[in-house]
Image (cartoon, rainbow, N blue to C red):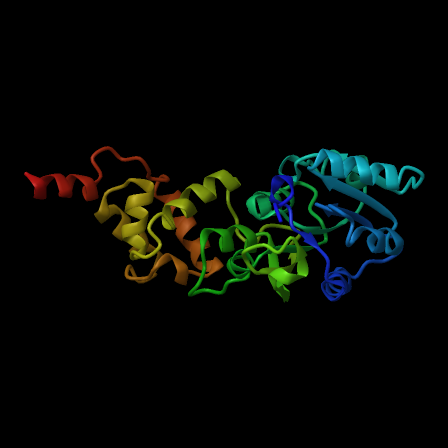
Length: 282
């Protein structure tokens, strides 16, 4: 069977639907954003258990069907939009109060959709989402298995796995396993930084070469001298032999503070790693 447009895989297993709804803990007065309602496996229950429901559907045909189905329900609003570009602080239903997010997120867009909500000025109180299993593991990882995605999520929210979902729970079955994850956003970021762009410049540099020791990865990622990267890490009190995946959130805070104190070094011409290679090649 040929997958539908946009590579959609529609949830059909009622036990998974039940687990998602129980984790979302919906109440009659809740405002809920459902991302990717598709054929509506979750939608009817969300509408019946909640107050206002905002349905964000990227597929134009699916959005039209949903709009027709709920055209007489004034508590349901259907938006044909890519959720990566949704502004939660601009919609009138969300701007004046709390809201929850529930969704079976498209694999190709899950990361930016999650970050869009978590980094918005008006965050949800909870997110119960279905994503690819490996992505869920990354989002909920502990020090030792951390990645840039782990950091990007856990700065803004706690993450808890709800249930693993095998391919046969969908129509058509995807080639990968999925997991349901519950994210509970914090009122403020767990780390202090001047701006997300500022912090993630450092973080992306730190994870540039994740299998290398931290100072090597920072030298590669920030394009700074190797000795400077080693000094930067040493000043934090962390072992320079540590690898990026082993750092906890508080370690990143210390590293960021030292990096800022040092003038945010990056893009230094003639980085030692590259210049050393040239010398060896001469």
